[in-house]
Image (cartoon, rainbow, N blue to C red):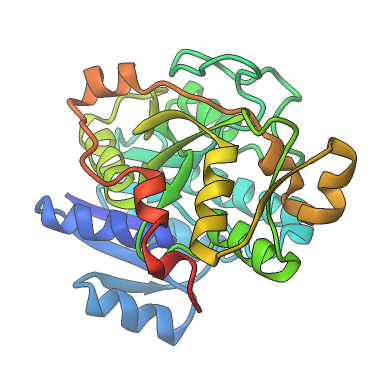
Length: 297
C-alpha cells in the first residue's frame, strides 16, 4: 500500500513512517520545509511538499495514495490551540473530500481528554457533544466523515513516550528544573494512560490495514499510572524534591500544562488488542523516563 502520512517527521509520525515501511508499505510524507523533506528521504519515504494550510497539496497527495494517516498537529504553542484546531479540521475535511467514495482508509489521531471522566475509557465510549477540548474536534470530524462515506477511523493516543520525546513528560521535566521541585496536585492519584512510541505506531499500521470505517482504536499499553509516580520519577532523575500542590497553586506552577497535570484519563485497550491482534512490547513510562536522556540537558 502507498500511504500518505501527515506529521511524518514528528515524534509519533516518524515512528509511524518507520513501522509502515517495515511492514512493506510505501510512504509519501507531507513536508513543509527542506529539513522535513530531507528527514523523510533519510527514512526512505518520498517527500510531498505542502502543509496542513495548503488544502490543494493535501488533496493532491491523497489522490496519489491508497490511504492516509494523519498525525500532524502543531502543539508547540498552546496559545494557538484554537487556531491550529481550525486548520486541522479544514485539512481533514479536504482529505475526506478526496477520499470520499474511494474506499481508501483515513486514520486520524485523537486523544482522551473529556472522554470518560472518572472512569476507564473504552473504545465504545463517545465524547459528548460540546465536551471536546476547546476548538479541537479531530475525532468528531473523522466520525462525521465516516458517516458521509469516507473509510475513516481514529487512533486515540495517551501519553506517548520514547526516544525523541519533546512534549508531554519533557514539559514537566522543564517545569521541575525551573521551579526546583517536581510537583503533583492534591494526592497525585489522578491517572495517566501511556504507550511507547513504537507500540503506538503499530496501532496505526494495523488500523490502516484493517480499515474499518468508524472504528476507534486505543493505543494504550498502561491503563492508569498515578501522576504522583511520574512526578516522583522526575524528581529522582533531577535530584529534586517531590511536592504536592493544592488545586489553587497548580495553575501558577504548571501554567498552560496545569490541566493535564490534574487530568484523570485512564483507558483500556482490550477491544483494540482483540480487533487488531495488537500487543505492546515497549518499556513502561516509568522505566523509559528513568533513562538519563529524559532528564539531563
